[in-house]
Length: 339
Image 1 (cartoon, rainbow, N blue to C red):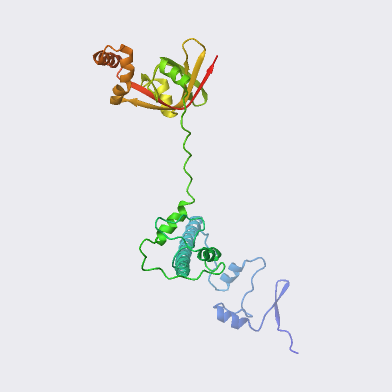
Image 2 (tube, rainbow, N blue to C red):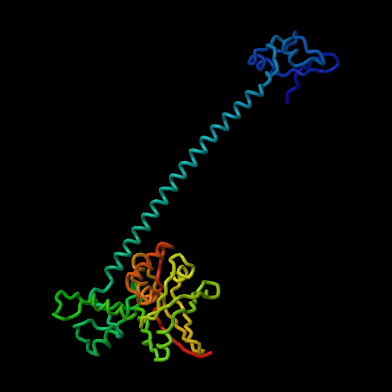
């Protein structure tokens, strides 16, 4: 056990001197404290002590400029933003390429499935329809063949149920035999909407005909959408199959008849209480054809004076209003009654 190193007293406090002090002082460039080196006075700063010992003075660090720190922060933020944007762009390109590759793969798979479905479809004559109408000149199928065709399972997709055996397509068609296309067309024709039944023939008894032939005026009923029918009077003429009366092309009843041609007429007898109702569809004749359609009305109006008088009357009507029209009613039902 070694004795403690000797100490020197500085004032009232003992100062311990380490054996490593000379080496440390030599390494730092400061003179080692020895017996002849004065000790630092109490309360003296480290810098002052070092200066007293011959070492360079230690100055506090210079103050940092706040503007410099802000510029450095902004530069760091800009660099980080550029790097982040580059990373996002790289990721977006990768996602775009991945989506394009996935879409191309899906399209390729769908095309392969379509090609596979087309290859699995049977080729040959279509399945016979027991309700099909045979084409003209085609021989009717035998009952055995029709039953076999009806028992064949239908092909509903790629493997949904047993597929019907493929039948080679016929290359030659016998004279007078219907082709598969004609048979298919006939099969589809069976599902078409049937034509509307023809209206029953119009029957007019002698009393009704006599009232119609003697009629000169009638009450005309025209449909109005969303409103009760419009009632007007007109000078009418029965020509044996139709009733006609003259009007104007711009008249309200003419406009409504263009939208809905259904019409009704009430013809009264010669003061004995009898009447006839006629319902049917109106046909509007206007323009250059209005002259010929109104000719029977003009002849009756002039009272058999002649065609010149009828033509003069027409010129008077055209001078008053050029837009002339004639309504021709084709009866669908004729009813009679008495008040």
